[in-house]
Amino acid sequence: MTAFDLLRFQDWTDPVPPAEREVVSLLPDEGEGHPPVLFVPGRRHSAAVFAEHWLPRTAGRGFPAHALTPRPGGDLRVQAHDAVQAAAALPRQTVLVGHGTGAAAVARALGRYPARAAVLVAPVFGRWRRTVPPRPVGAPPVLVVGSPDDRTVSPKALDRAAAAYGVAPLMFPGMGHDLMLEDSWAEPIDAILDWLTKQL
Image 1 (cartoon, rainbow, N blue to C red):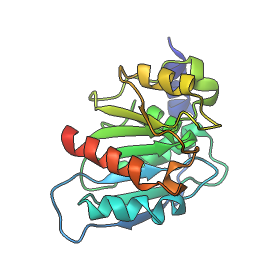
Image 2 (tube, rainbow, N blue to C red; image 1 turned 45 degrees about the horizontal axis):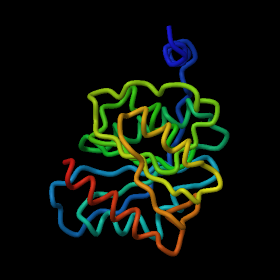
Image 3 (cartoon, one colour; image 1 turned 30 degrees about the vertical axis):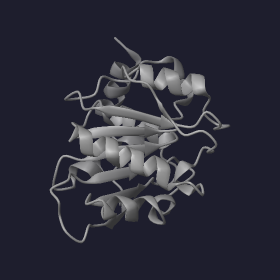
């Protein structure tokens, strides 16, 4: 039995209580048939962290763009649960994009939700860093994005997170931890959307 099997057992014996979820949405002017993209921030951020740049850019490229605000006080299990519930409420199989601890929530959600694809941006796995994440349901393509100059997530941690999915991290030198708020915010989201377009 793995640590994640034990976590699932907790989901069954002590289910996450229901709560209202804040989801900010921005739809493209013309539908291009792309799947929805759900951004999941870390616990210190809300959906607003994606609203200024990444949501408009994503909708501008034809993807229905959504961002979830973590409920107050929720731990990683609760955050993953809310990501699964928000994705399942969207009309099509969804792309999950998690940032920071939100990336850890997405990694956990992938064990329960058959995402169309997933992107882990500057993933903070915390105590999970020595643990293999759960095998994604449906084997979606996974991209790991970060910066070698991130003071929160080391290049070694990015390599380790990417290796868990059999990929190499996509790096953006000169950027900090919050890539979506940097002056050069467009570079990573454009690269993510280019990657998604090739994968879908």
